[in-house]
Amino acid sequence: MLEYLATFYTHMGAINYYRYLKKIGVRAETLPVPRKYSSNCGVAVKFYTEQDIENLISEDMEKLFMIVDGEDQLIYRNELE
Image 1 (cartoon, one colour):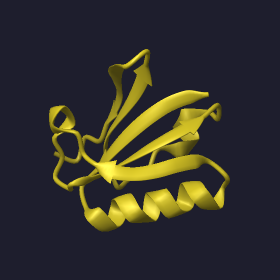
Image 2: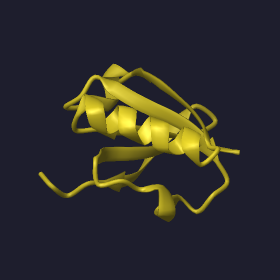
Image 3: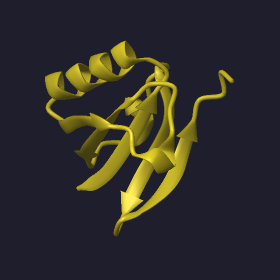
């Protein structure tokens, strides 16, 4: 299973994404955004999947990190800014 951490522009965006992942059977949890990831919203969603990540990107996402051996890699940044 690959591990990901998503940050969001709004609290509601994070909650809706968490609910979406749970609905499609993806193991997920909400947590405070770690400082090093800073975000407009204080809630992040950590999830684990083998699915094609392209299909899981949401317009509410600010950034998406893949976490491998405790090291993060930015794999998506929303260009709304």
